[in-house]
Length: 198
Image (cartoon, rainbow, N blue to C red; front, top):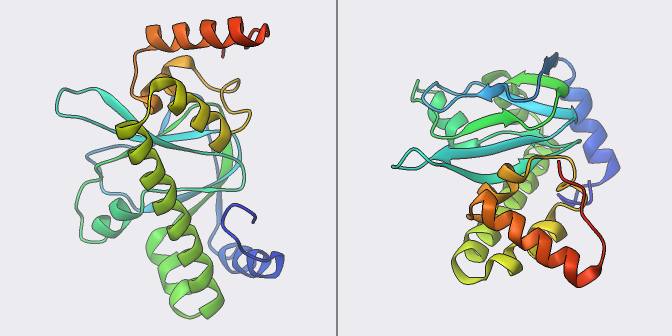
């Protein structure tokens, strides 16, 4: 609620509405929730675990855009909108840890949202938060050093580094896993405290 600036009343209202179409799901670490190239039709609400979103660039290299944690909806909005007309998703969603949660059909959720003003405002807040997060990440990757990007990642996702692979963090920062290891060693030397590898 703090992350997207909504009240407890608004959160509970939306939760109760979506509960009418929610279906529980579980995936293992490494499984895709959404594949690039396949039309997106589902929204995934994460009860436990970490989901990573990203895409493959022209060279076939994975580029990580963001992470979704407990209490967040793992979704790629543009892919869902394009999926309404059968267009394939550009981004993927993959489980970085085992995931438990609920899935909602996008079209059904959109119909419910169109009938409830509070739900419309709630989803607008989520969309704005997502845009701000992606904009910050784009600026950070283009204008800051790897050390600054790592510090920004740790601030945006406190505690997440210990839960996911070093490769995933490196992909998010736009660096190689080898350089990520070097950054960690430098941080350990500076603080004297080793960081647990995922």
